Length: 406
Image 1 (cartoon, rainbow, N blue to C red):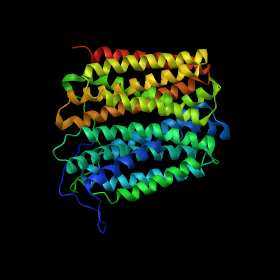
Image 2: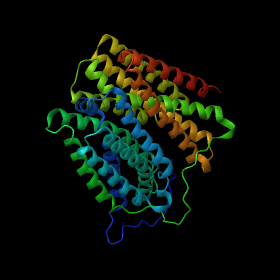
Image 3: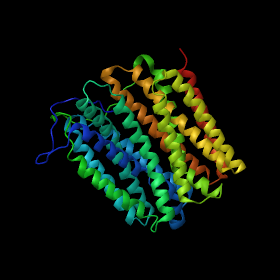
Image 4: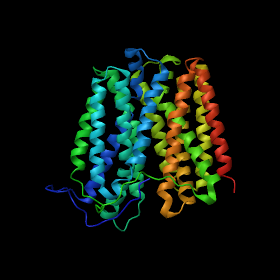
């Protein structure tokens, strides 16, 4: 969503000796990974919050929706600001904002406090995602001016989706084997976030700071290809809805329907899903967009079907296989959606067109899981999941038919 801007020579923070562009590249990659990992720390902990505070699965989805709301607001209000105020001036405060949310999580004793903490996490992630991705591209270009951007794109993908997988794995293991399951994971990431913010302050700046009238990120729809654009948005909606399932209610499904309450297992499931998504984005990044869309829809559909089946036959192996397949499909389907929108839009409006795609995705992240959470209050979880999976499959297949139509 942010359009990378090149401006040399690189500059450091006043009074500090900046690291070089090469070392700075890895500092930003590490900070990006830590920030994204922190954003999924609560995933295996929701069941513990339910036990402590006695709230329903629907409240879990509300807390999850708070994160999505924060991301959307931040993406459209602050995600593009680093293009003219500087990457560091956005990235460091965003990391500190996430650190503040970690502190709030550590002391939270009520649902409203948890809601605010998740909202702050989302705001921080929205500021970080576009900024860190652009920062990596510019530092790479400065350090290796004759090389392509493949390395920067690969590292950004690994840090983003890989981080989302690492967070629940670490917090799940800590919650299972260390005292203070609802405080220790946040304390660990609080330290990592503060260290990340401190080291980012020494990375050279890559844009020329300029005075510009502020405006929110605009959304632009290509006029000559609206049908395909909205279909790409529907595909992103379906992919993010599936992602939301595995980062909100899936741990509760594992604990209740499959009768496996291990927090380490819950974190491991999320790790497998995000790891599969990151791997397929990397593996299929050179495939034609049509192939990406076809593979993504088919693989995600099969994965959701297997996950749903595992709820009825009560099988952990089936659940894991389905989760990995769904994650693989999510990664390549979203990559195909981004490629579609990038090809449909002009260079001058590409950022605005991608903004609309991300908006569709994050609506998909929040709304379907809210409906799923509400449905679990009236029907058994496995039947609610069956309805959710059917709806997501219908949307993704309909989107695919339009996108693959010449």
